[in-house]
Amino acid sequence: MDKADVVWMMASTVLVWLMCVPGLALFYGGLARQRHVLSVMSQTLCTCALAIFLWFLFGYSLVFTPGTGLLGGIDHLGLAGLYRADATDNLPLWGSMPELLFALFQATFAAITCGLITGSIAERARFGAVLCFTGIWFALGYLPIAHMVWAEDGWLHLRGALDFAGGTVVHISAGVAGLVAAFVIGPRLGHGRLPMPPHNLPMNLTGAALLWIGWFGFNGGSALAANAQAVLALANTLLAAVCGVLAWAGAERLLKGKASLLGATSGAIAGLVGITPAAGLVAPSSALLIGALAAWAVFYGVNGLKRLIGIDDAFDVFGIHAVGGIVGALLTGVFYSASLGGPGPAGLSALLSQTWRQVEAILISMIWAALAAGIAAYLANRLIGLKASDEQETQGLDQIDHGETAYPT
Image (cartoon, rainbow, N blue to C red; front, top):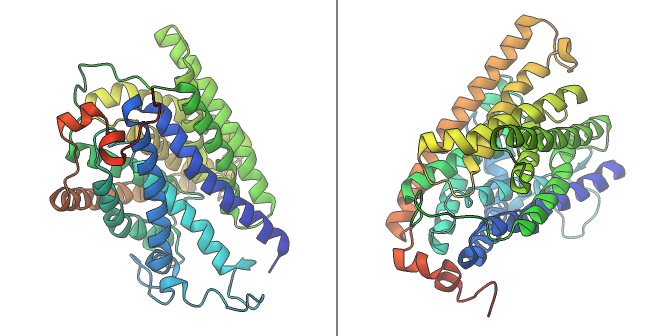
């Protein structure tokens, strides 16, 4: 056990949880309309909490215990075998840290993935149904995808797919699941006819800033040690995000005449999403390109592509996370090549081969996440009823589901 690695991974775990609460809660809360703010924040908080709970019941074991290519084993259900009552240092290790700490770190990834999905169905999904959907999708969607990509015996991992910190496991799967859930639940009342602007952009920016800070632990911690790869991941995280801000602001200024704060904030998140699968695997110069290209792709995703699809993805979870994750995962295969400054094998053949492995992982993760989301949304709708009535939506889910208001008069 290396004490420096333990301290870094403990700090990274806290940083990723900062992304969930308060980061994502404030980010989504600022995007919501005033009468739905607490509903959105409550769903974010409680889905993250539910994911952590389920992770420790059975999630960790089914992802990281050796099993089949699709799912892990059951030896560590309830974290069995990962701790001692006397809290001595004689604990099972994962690399140079206690395996319990690795389980804690990975728990926060499961939480942020489930929390992200709530943004797609915000402002019309009932609280209990969202939790029901989350529990089912967590079991059917997140756990198999995480095992396939990250576990040593996972099918996609053995095929050579690269995902340093969660481009496929977190962002693509959450974006696709959110889009399917939004399709099943249907649009918000007045979607396409009435303006639905964010109620508080300073709150949104505050949440984005906390997400950005937490992302250093998200990407840097994925090195699983306090080492040079962690430093590279931190550098690439910062560089990709700032390029995302500038690329989005430039595109908006050119095409719309004004660069908005919401756009610059979205550009930062797009750059962060894009660099996630590549953070510890590419050169800093590549991170600059990935951040810019991801921002431009997401700019199209939340404008042209969203209108083309026609589904009310309230907070653009698919447009930002799925589109940005796809671009990042593909570019990971490209810039991993030693010919472009990465640690992988050099040559065009190796570059094309790795990129094809990335395509495989993207397509399989998208299909799996979509099917699991369809099943979860169908069951949640039948068991509880996903969508609020028109009257409830008009009154506001803050009052309907929680009996509270964010801004008492």
